[in-house]
Image (tube, rainbow, N blue to C red):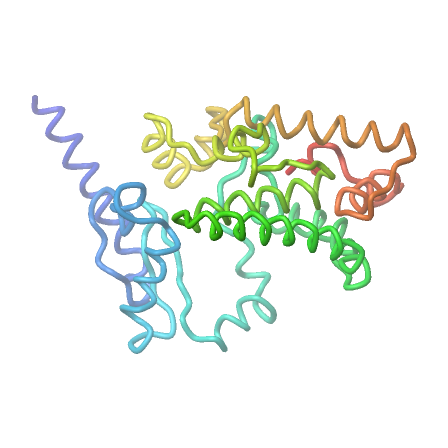
Length: 285
């Protein structure tokens, strides 16, 4: 019993020390709650984007920047546009960690452009940045327009039938069709087919398993340990589905010389380059 009490006391002291990280550096911070930090409500009653918005509204007239905690991990949030500009440009080398968990070895789809650290991010960015030129984006506009017309027709039918419009669901399906068409060259038909496989697998990405709070705590507080334990943020069936689609699409287009003027075409071109080539896993991510 005494050992247990001592252990609890030491854990409490450790957490108290962690939650004064910003205070000890003279940076204002929002009051954390042990052991959650400032994200106790995530997954229960709010989303991370809404929580950040609330933080901003609380502090926008008080501080140009301030600190919060995602569990034990200190996170800096910047309000002032000039400071944001410096962080993203002039002082970017000091803000390389994007704070997003990824595991290249066991969860390859998590290693995308928005999660990689600076060195790996820079390499991948150099590879794919040419695909985002205005000229190349222009080729995809007709494809995007076609999906937009499908959305217009679908909503017109619902309005004619005087149906209640579930805008969130409709736009999620529209986005799925847009991504499927532009990125994979696949007609997903998510708007008209509620059982479309692409739509179902996309939704599974955001499903919350029972052990999600444990995973969230682990990757939020102990990234290295999470990598050592082969922790994944994307389900195996979802990961396998999208990697297989990418692999089959790339092989089919290369074999048959197919070009559709979409984003996949641009990425396939990069797989053929000697110096800045992309792997199948990088394309999928």
